[in-house]
Length: 335
Image (tube, rainbow, N blue to C red):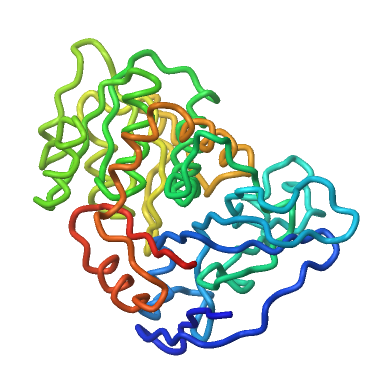
């Protein structure tokens, strides 16, 4: 079979590899589509702190079951499945609490194990979900980033907040998916902050109100907003924290490269809830799959680029994702 291996910074090769076999508790999946994640790009350019070439990347994937291990009854041949990339250790307190996203020893398919830029992959059955009939293959490849949005918005249930005004910093894939979920499902009034003109046009095309400066935000009078920080930019975080009226809740998704100082005084002064959001759980992917089987799938599908790349075009696809200014999702057709 063919697979794409990142052999050095910004260089993939297509190579032949042995077909995998389903060991105990595994299924072999013929990969149909695989998306390119921001974390994949960090590996591609050599900036990921833990994962380096050579590696077979790919974790935003959908496919068809071609082999199931003996005695495994949760899947059958021909099932369309989406990959749940996150693998907890199964033993720590977080895993026992069904929060493998917080597991210190967690692994991710495509980083610590061989990924889905391969025609077939052996994957633990625990890390696969069967797609609803109404969820298309391309939508299945969007489930992982959609699960990030499902997880982060679900964290709002942990706190009390009064209004439906939402401000999101960054119109990348995650910011847009969060916005779509809040606007279309929860009926929130969503404003996105973005300075890149291509992303501004893209977000406006999806019906969002877009502003260039956080200080230009004007929500409903008498309501404090809920904020989602998706940029990982220190200055953006600080401006968002300090708008007037200050956010009632701040959900933080951006990956920051340096420390940010937010004093206990600042948290108390405006009675702001700060919530960190870390990846997702299998439950979030199941919920995302349910969303992708409703009429909303047509809206969510608009974040996919017009061109679907072939596996042999993997270098071109990664360059497109790296240099994309629109915030759309780049997808590779693997087989």
